[in-house]
Length: 178
Image: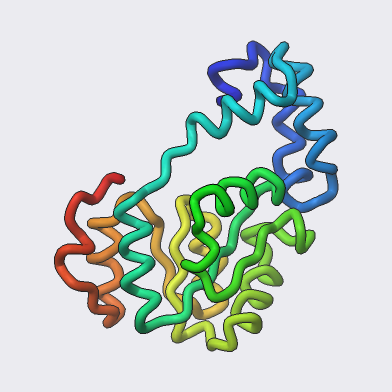
């Protein structure tokens, strides 16, 4: 959204981690984005939210995996926005535990956030699969003994899961993009 609506994103480059880590208040972050974009705070959130696309195939896969495994959500994001999306789409039941970085004052790839999630789920790293869209976060998880994969699409993730002995019914892997 920023790339489309902010001519000079430089003022925002140093704040994304601050808001994700809870060092910067959500409202201050939104006010700054609104200021540099020339939009109102409401328009900022409406624009960001409009570009969010729920991956229905991933949701279906998580439903299937949850029948057999504990599932955790570990998100670097600002809590008010993530909570709204999760509430509106009734997604909380997909997860046994969740950590929203801004609420816990920890962000991926910090080892502390992974250790906290392992404790919350009461699982060992070596019995845990971690998927993320950023290689740096996957690498951090692997250093702690988790089996990690960069998430590209559901079809590839199903193949990745099979390499570590997690079997998934074939229909969950179909329609991989979304």
